[in-house]
Image 1: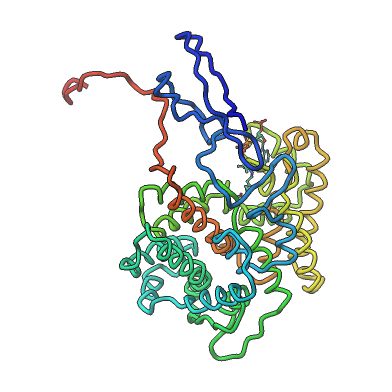
Image 2 (image 1 turned 180 degrees about the vertical axis):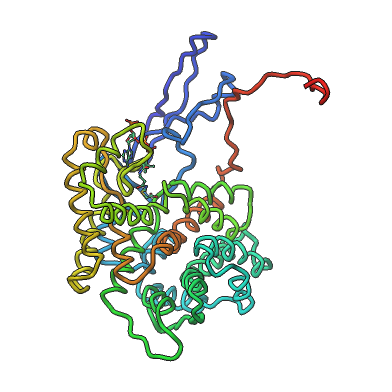
Amino acid sequence: MTKQTVTVTDNVSGKQIDFDLLSPTMGPKAIDIRKLYKELGYFTYDPGYLATASCTSAITYLDGDKGTLMYRGYPIEQLAEQSTFLETCYLLFKGELPNAAQKQDFEQVIARHSMLHDQMQFFFRGFRRDAHPMATMVGVVGALSAFYHEDLNIQDPVQRERCAHRLIAKMPTIAAWSYRYSKGLPFMYPLNKLGYAENFLRMMFAVPTEEYEVDPLMAKALDVILILHADHEQNASTSTVRLAGSSEANPYAATAAGIASLWGPAHGGANEAVIRMLQEMVDSGKPLQYWIDRAKDKDDRFRLMGFGHRVYKNYDPRAKIIRRIADEVLARTPADNPHHKLFDLARELEQVALSDEYFIKRSLYPNVDFYSGIIFLSMGIPLQMFTVMFALARTIGWISQWDEMMGDEESRIGRPRQLYIGATQRDYVPLDQR
Ligand code: CMC
């Protein structure tokens, strides 16, 4: 294939430079601007990375205009329908679906790593009971590096894979214990014979004094939600993990950085914000149009949470699947369950917004967070745990992307440049002259 280039003419110096045009297997081509500064002495300016590919990756592909998402080439709809979360973890990390023996082996390895070091319970106990579970999670995941420091040769792919196994396996225990501690409930240990989602639900809701049966419908629904959240290419938290890891920081610390980034309401915190918004709408008794008008008002900071996405300018494919799961899960709960009211309101809001010129013009559609919170509430998972659920699912994405970066010869320490707009050089003014 002939090499494609893009020629840039610098109207200031009159120079013309050819830049290589890089072709991905899917998606827009990218101009390789690595020699730009050397050749022309310019940086590029792209706040929020709207048009910048920060790395090459073979893990996840999404097309925001079409509303498609694929892990390692497999459409998310097929994985949600036919795969399991652990199989999807294997796929994301290793690149291929496992055969039967590999699948069984992987499930056993993950089950065997699910306990936390006994000393770790004291980390939980050091937090205030009213700490947000995300705060606890950031701290405890970062603390994992203090337990496995002898096993952290990140240049060694085998040790990297072991880190991945530990993180995937321990995250449900850490997530559930963050909740249990906040409620003053005893920690429940994982039970290796249970599936990943089942185990998590049991650690969340069982008590040591009674038998606990996990509802298979809830376990299946949770498993699918975990699949849908498992990876989403170079989003804010994944880019944070890559940036933190690019300095060769250990993967537990880099994952803790990813959790911190996920916490914000513009990213993983949105599912919590959606429920708060819907509840406020119900409580206020105001018509939907009042909220729609506020969302459109540029002088009002209110936004429709769960709407809009940096990349999807079409219906988020994950939101479609989640809405179906919400239907199934809510059908299981009594008709007078208050979550029905939230779900009905969410559906109505979606209809109103999707026929409104403002939302149509800006391609604002429901995103993955719009319905996920309603499902979590129906499972008994409280509001403050929502972002923790997202972190639990996204861990495999973070660690797969980190592993890919560590094995990538082109990867360098992440070090963006800036367009300095501050004061030019000036002399220090002694205190008595200011
Ligand atoms: N409600 C009302 N207006 C909106 C909304 C919204 N939810 N989202 C975007 N807009 C408007 C925005 O005001 C702007 O209008 P204008 O062009 O007139 O200035 C236009 O749409 C483009 O928005 P933007 O802020 O430039 O888009 P962005 O790509 O920077 O932001 C976003 C994407 C997700 C942060 C934003 O849509 C948002 O804040 N949504 C609500 C929070 C949310 O649901 N976040 C979850 C994201 S999905 C989960 C994840 O991947 O983490």
